[in-house]
Length: 176
Image (tube, rainbow, N blue to C red; front, side, top):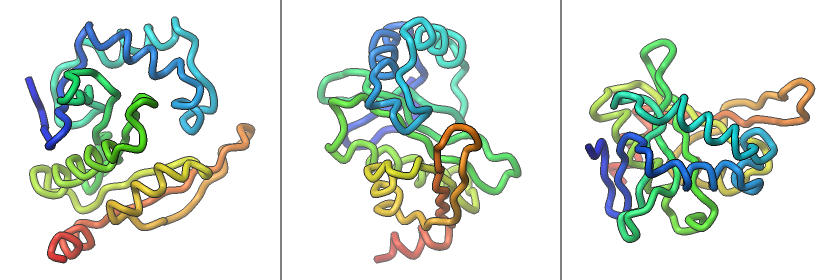
């Protein structure tokens, strides 16, 4: 079942056939560089896929399998994490390295932002990016997010920048 679709992508529940591409993506040190700092060992990637992604019932919130239509191929996962207070959600996206630099993360992000504000009628969408992840920060700014604050992760040497996009700002950008 396709949950959401854009001109070049569609989003659906994860399937068993996605496992190899999921594992390949999460064992790539460059993909994991800004989300934990290191590649996962293959067994951890397989375990995470099977326990947290495979066979999960289709719901609005969560990271959806992202399929590149042109190739009919799993290229990552994108979506919204559930809001804690009912007012907003958190945007997330992970794409395999061969699909970087094509505007696919921006396309996916925009689709889920639109979903958040139209179908879900949320007041805001949040996102975060590790400091130094210029590509993700560029995507967030391009989608209209504003920098809110930063946090240092104790003992890990990581700095996370937090962003927010309010529905009113999104609506004004759409009118332009």
